[in-house]
Every structure is written in C-alpha cells, then in structure tokens.
Image (tube, rainbow, N blue to C red; front, top):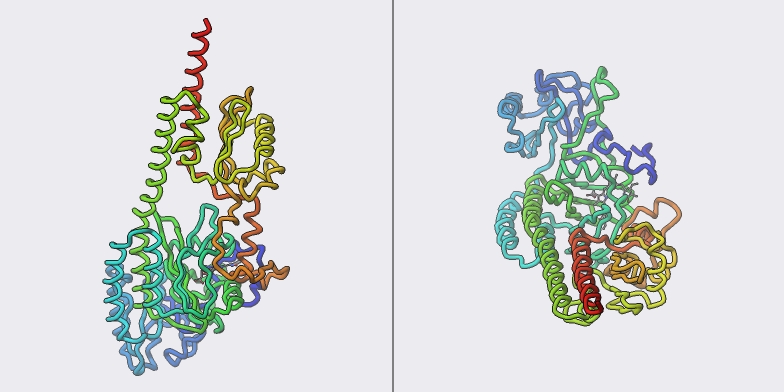
Length: 515
Ligand code: BLA
C-alpha cells in the first residue's frame, strides 16, 4: 500500500475504487452469483471464520462456515433471497452470530459479483436513541428558519449520533474548492469554521465516487489495511471494484492528511443537490472510533433530510437574490424615468447601482465625472481603468473575477476590485458603470487563530493538513474575487438598456428643442 507513495501531482489519477485493500476492522468475501464460488477474500478472513484465505478461494461460499457454529444454510438462504429479489439494500444489515459474537453482514451486488462484508455490531441501546434523534431531526429540519440554522442543527444531530469530536458541514464552491460552513466540536479543538480549502484536497475521482456511495468511514487511520486476495486464475487487470463497499481502504495520501492533522478516525457523508455534490458532512475523531452500520445509516438519513431541504432552501436563496436584483433594477428604471438626472437616479437615490448585484463597490463615469459607491478603487484608478477598457475588444460589457490577470495595474487595488463587471454607456464620452468585488481572501471569515502563522511548507507531507491547505488556497485565490452570478449579469445588462433608453430619449428631446 505504501508503494503508492504520496504524490501530490497525481492526485486525480489515483484509482481509489480499486486499490485492492479493505480496512482491517472488517472482513470481505466476493462470490460469483451463479455458483456462489468464492473469488476474492480479504487476507484477514481467518480472524472471522478460522480458515486461511488460500483455503477459501475457489470454494463454494458455504466453506466459509465450516469452522463456525452458524449452519451453512442460513447464509445460502440469505443469498438466495437477495439474488431472487435483488433486495440487498432493504436486507442490510443482516444480523449473524458466529461463534457467540454478533456481526452485521452487509451485502451488495456490483459488476457481476456479490460482495459480503462483515462488521462488528455496536451498542444496541443506540438504536433506540437514534430513532428518537431522527424524529427530532425531522422536526428541526422543518422548523429551521434559515439555511445556516439548518446546517448547524444537522451538524449537531450527526455529532450526537456518531459521537465524534468534530462534525463539520463542508460546502463546495463553483470551482470545487470548499469552505467549512457549520461546525460542532469539542471545546479543546481549534475551530475550522470559515476556513477554505483548495479543490485538490478532495480530488475529482473522490468527488465522483462520493456521489455514488454516500458514506465512508475510516475507523482507524493508524491501522494496516488488509489486502484482497483473488483466485489464481483471476485476471490481474480486473481488480475488485470497491465503489459500493463499506470497508474500502482509503487513499494513502488522504491517510497522511488525517495523520498530519492529528485525526485517527474520519467519517464523511455526501450532501447532494439535484444529483450534484453540494458538500460533505465531514467528521473527525482524535482517537480510532468505529461507527456501526445502523448508526451510519442514521447519520446518512439526517444528511439526506438536509439534502432534501437544500433542494428548496437553495432555490429560495437564488430566487431571493434574483428577486432583489430585479426589484432594485425596476426601482432604478423608475428613478431614471421620473427624474432627468442620470447621476442622481443611479448613485444618489435610495436605490443605487450598488443594489443590483452583490458587489461591494461601484463607480459611475458620466459627463467626465467619477462617482464612487461602497468599497471602490480611487478616482485615478477608475479613470485609468476606463482608458484601458476600449483597448479590450469587450464590446459593451466586461465580466471578470480576475481583473489583475487581465489588467495588471488592478493588482494595486485587488483588495477592493479583483472582480469587475463593467457596462459601457458611451465609448466616445468614456461613460461607464463599474461594479467591484474584493479579492476572495478578504471576505474569508478568519475563524482560526489569526495570530498563528500559516506557511506553505515546501515538502508535500506538511502540505497535507487543513492549516497548510488553507494557506495554499489563499495563494490560489490571490487576485480572484467571488464569481458573478447569472442573476447579477442579467441585472446589469438590463440596467444598461434602461439607462441608454433614458439617455437617448433625453438627447432626442434636446435635439428637438434646438431645431
Ligand atoms: C478525501 N479529503 C478527502 C475527504 C475529505 C478531505 C473530507 C473524504 C474522506 C474522509 O471522509 O475523510 C478533505 N477533510 C478534508 C478537508 C478538511 C477535512 C479539506 O477535514 C478540512 C477541515 N488530499 C489532499 C491532497 C490530495 C488529497 C493534496 O489534501 C491529493 C494529492 C487526496 N483526499 C485525497 C484523496 C481522497 C481524499 C485521494 C479520497 C480518499 C478515499 O476516499 O479513498
């Protein structure tokens, strides 16, 4: 396993679904569905059934139980029912007692094989507690007033169910970087709330996998994974696919990450919004901690409640801002029509150009004067920007979230204007409206200890931890603002039409008067 040396340049290429190991707190057997012949076993299987793996490979599945007190028929019966009805999901977990110990057997069928995975059974009392918690969680989801409340409540519920030290809601951005948007943690832990991480911390193939298999548990990051052995004639180019496995050993790169941040157990649950990964509930424990299947299902259920709620909360969020921009745009249009004064209508009235986007600053260049609103670059910089614009073949509109990359002098005012939305009113007269967004890093809530220096270490090992990841992210987003949304772009394009309509009408009136 360690031969897959930590390689930070190849993150996306590591085939994490076929790494050939499971975590050693459980046991795995894969059988052919037609003959029930064993074709793969985890190397640790003897701990469960008292028979070495090599003696099991190629044998009928009932050979597994030869040394146990469980009648072979019980297992065959279970497999027959599952195969006949294709009902593995509803049957899981199957409770089996072997030599006086209870096990949860989790079965699924994928790519022509049936996978059997055995895990320990946790404290039975938790089942009842979890049922009560689920009912409370349902009520809470229904009554959460804001998205923030909903995220916090979800984190709290999941923490109670699985008992980990820290439970975070991690939300992906459009560029797949992520931010911790809610956190429930023990008091002695440093907060991660508000910190951002680069997309590479959870690479693409991992995100794809997490859309299909919604829960993963790393019960003990310090344990040695157990290798999967195959029948001698099994083709070496067909490694066992662990996409749906509950015991899959995770990437050694990620194990390194966990170790570097002092975490020995990690569990994460996918949050989906319209079939796409919206975020993860990411849970840590400083010591190894197994969470049994029913508790994982309970945590997954709470997360699914959140996913379902996101469907309308997110719509609500989007609709609210769209509605606001549209309403404010209409107010601006009315102000323009009612008053003959473009400047007063746009920058000196109750609603200004600043209200049709999420921009934190804006500027109007009109009649050779500059009017600034909110956090905007100074007048000289605004005039210089207006001089540069026509040299760009931008037609009448420019949108960027990386202005300093297009226009290097903007680096001087990146704190207020890394993002620019510009509309042209008149190229000849140099008349424009600009909207600005600050460099993203300025907007980050620095929830950690701001006095603690964070540096990006040259060696990859240290790169693999949240603090240094955060620092790496701040490097990535230098000179970059939050993106402009469709709603914002739509609003300013519409505003341009409204302004031009009024300006043209005024020009025509003046022309008529002068005739
Ligand atoms: C997986 N990385 C993950 C997972 C998380 C994170 C939550 C899911 C697995 C799990 O549940 O533990 C990242 N965890 C975080 C972050 C925080 C956190 C950002 O707690 C912040 C508080 N990781 C790297 C780099 C690479 C990398 C540089 O940092 C690649 C070179 C890889 N991360 C990586 C891989 C996986 C992963 C390959 C998949 C692990 C697996 O499922 O096998």
